[in-house]
Amino acid sequence: MTPQITFWGAARLVRTATYAALLVALTACGKSNADSSVLKYQIATLESNGTLPKLDRSSDVAGIDTNGNDVRDDIEAWIDAQPVTDMQKTALMQNARALQHTLTVDLTDQAALGSVGAEIVAAIHCGVSRFSTFADFYKYSQNLEAITANTKNRAVRYIQYNNARSGAVNSTPDYDTCTP
Image 1 (tube, rainbow, N blue to C red):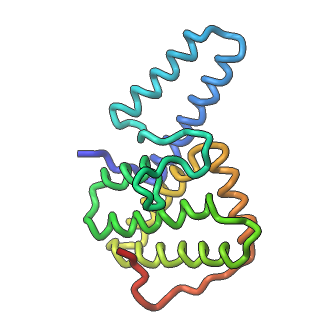
Image 2 (cartoon, one colour; image 1 turned 60 degrees about the vertical axis):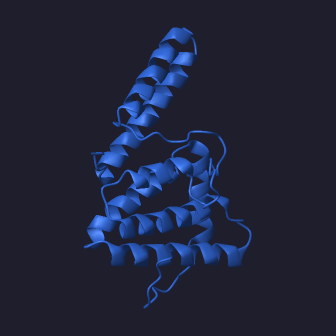
């Protein structure tokens, strides 16, 4: 059974991965490549045994999406591994898709920004309707947010999206917003 990652667990994983990446970078600045290789091996081991999720750390903001469903492959694999129902996984995929769009939307196009904002509201509304409590959905949503912005380029882009949307308002729908 795949261990369930809580919000705080995800934050700890992100922090650990960040520290490990910093250590790799610092080690590479003046020490042998052997030390750097050891740290990379340790991270790979943590990923392979499930302690850390296997995440795409490429410099490409969009990441790899081989099936073209607008969800990065690593995030889709993480969702598939979660101990939730199929309906809940569908809601998490909708949430992941909306979060992914925050990274790829044209930040100068106000209409597109508004559409992504509405997508996020719809995904949250759907998620809340599919989980027994808001807290249950929220812990997964927070994990998705953390793993979506798992590199410096993605984190910067996510912040840019949020800055572009600053002050914008979307209404919460009063109908089923879940997508298939």
